[in-house]
Image 1 (cartoon, rainbow, N blue to C red):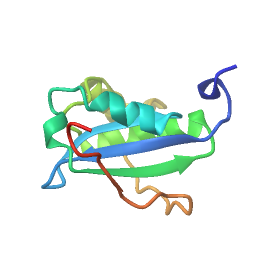
Image 2: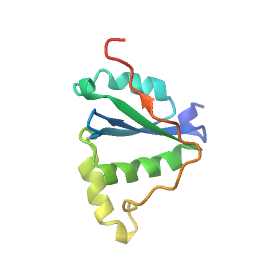
Image 3: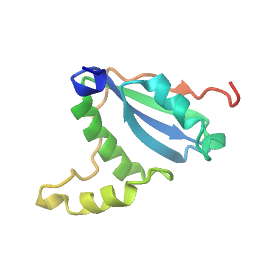
Image 4: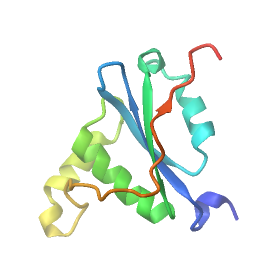
Length: 118
């Protein structure tokens, strides 16, 4: 069984540029591998900062990821329109509308993005 298939620790990350514009919000159990994969994106040259929060399992991380995508409207999340539309219909029991995230005692400090070319 892979870690992503059960209650293993998961991360929600927010990738930002030098002006704190949110470029991408994602969720993973393999933070280093996922961030490395983003280095190959056409927009990778803009990455300057990554904020990370740790969550007890996949379900909790998915809920936070969805809420953050709707709240922050990252430039390069491809499913953002679908999530925003779902949030607008949330009064009928769909995806939860944006909310203030509780303070995360398990939050990582800001993680500096690796320099390009390394």
